[in-house]
Image (cartoon, rainbow, N blue to C red; front, top):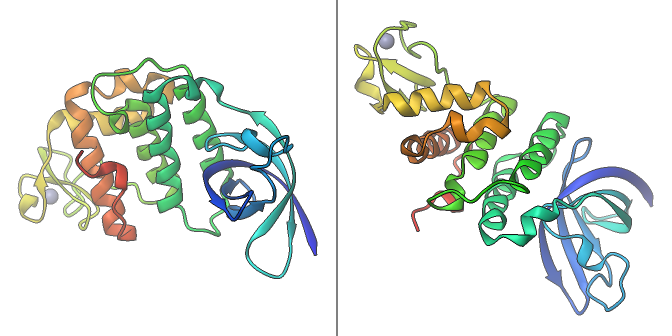
Length: 244
Ligand SMILES: [Zn+2]
């Protein structure tokens, strides 16, 4: 048996058996990990209620023969407690965690992804609810656009993906690799100028400014572009991106 000490953010918890919980974790050095917290649902458990989705903790994990690790201890670094007092924030945070669960490969250990996720949860902990569904919160969209960059999936946004022209960029194609000019637009779908601008602004601004970077009318369009890119590269559709 070997031991692993690592910081990690809890992405998901699943009840298991009588009193256990299986955690999906994201670690900056270990990537996505699964670990069982034995007895975590027993009254008085030291692990218990602290290991909720969105919590950042320092874990001591034991590795046995299988892929499932065992939690030996965990001490909370940042609970992101503000997320838990608002249904809106909680649902927005779920969109962040789901994005990592579904789009980051298991062995992809990236300190950048970890810090991006912890920053996004931190900003969401104090964010004011916006009009519209939580999955379209500008912090969620900003996180997703920045995650495309960190993951190497960011489409070309400043010049035509086919001919390189930076004039009259009117369409988008995830398959072609980015925005398209008027001459090459045949392969793509129309791109609203506000959506194009919001993508660029979200990339260039910290998450605390996401609200200004992504005006309300551009949010659905940004979500669509992120969805098209993830579909193209990974073949996944985010559950949170399906219409409600
Ligand atoms: Zn072109």
